[in-house]
Amino acid sequence: MVLEVAAAVLAGIGVYELFRMKGLAILSFEGVLSILGAVFLVLPAERWMPFLSGDNSNFMMFYLTVMIILGFSVVSKNTYTIDEAGFPVIVSLYVGVGFQNLVTARASSLAILLFAFFIVWSTDIGAYMIGRQIGKHKLWPEISPNKTIEGALGGIASAVVVAIIFFLVQPAVFHHNLVTIIIFTLIFSIVGQFGDLVESAIKRHYDVKDSGNILPGHGGILDRFDSMLFVFPMMHLLGLF
Image (tube, rainbow, N blue to C red; front, side):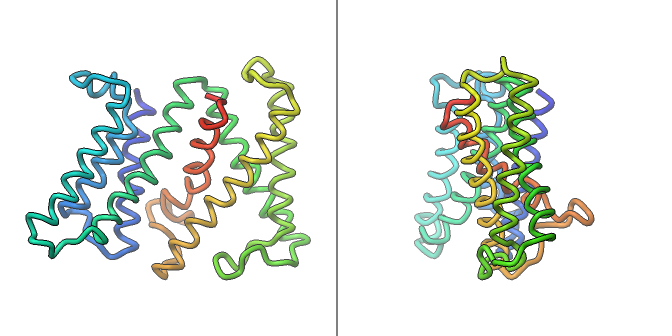
């Protein structure tokens, strides 16, 4: 339950950071509804919304916020348009689904949750160390000028090494053989790095250095969780939890 509350709070902060980057007030009808939408996605319905029925209760509560946001175009006589409504909707979906899958991973197994963190952390550390030592060819200079192809490959290699060690120490955690886990790890490491690039693209679009300043010296919540917001859903899609 503590992790669920923490994930919901982090999701709310993530929504706030995106609104802040765009220059929108979080204490507005769309800001509040966007946070609510993300929180509705994160908190398990059976525990936090027992008055609801059905397997899709989380999504339906999220969609309720979408309907209200879209309905404001009518109330405002179309001065608030569907284009403007798209931002708070996609923000709550992006952040909410990512943290929802973090919570689902923990409900499945603490080891799976740790596996995801280890893959992301080892990718980040490997990419930084290898890129700093031998990185010469830019990976995507228009989005993140400091990242290199050598660093990206180093991050993937580091993640694979960590995954092999994790598998040898905790083989019972997985329902797959080592080769499959290595293939999955390649995917997770690549997807995690892409998630990092997505957030870099968002920051570049809004011309900000960090998503926030809640973590002095480390930026905002999205700066710390951008890779994980992509990795956890991919892990879920591939059936690890």
